[in-house]
Length: 191
Image (cartoon, rainbow, N blue to C red; front, side, top):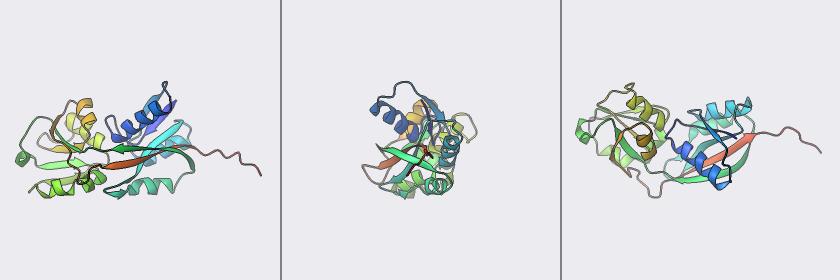
């Protein structure tokens, strides 16, 4: 089974996809990292994946707006949902004090989930990068400068050999995100 997730390796969507496969008894699957919801639904429409996984709402930051924008462009069936308690971490290439970080890269919903933590940092630029795990990959590969950090998962830190320099940054605990599991719409409707 081909499972498309809206994130890079180490994303919360990847974790939700793996959890769904285990819960559903799907052992033979391949993950496709499609970065965003538009990518997931486009691949589903073209038949490149069998099911897609992406976030739609978080109990702290609310609706994941890009998901709803993408959902308005495609026809699909929601077949299930997966709830994930999201623990946001601050990741860096090496351990560094918070006052040495010049910018933090991540995805807007992650920033919205960590407002209290971010308010305590002074002179740190906040830069939207479109996906938490992609930001982690880009930090590890040098696309993002070494004096910067990323908000993302501990899973992304492991995947890209980054250091977790702070954890549980989210304002609300638990910090639950609901992911939808979708498949291509069956157009064979009969009366």
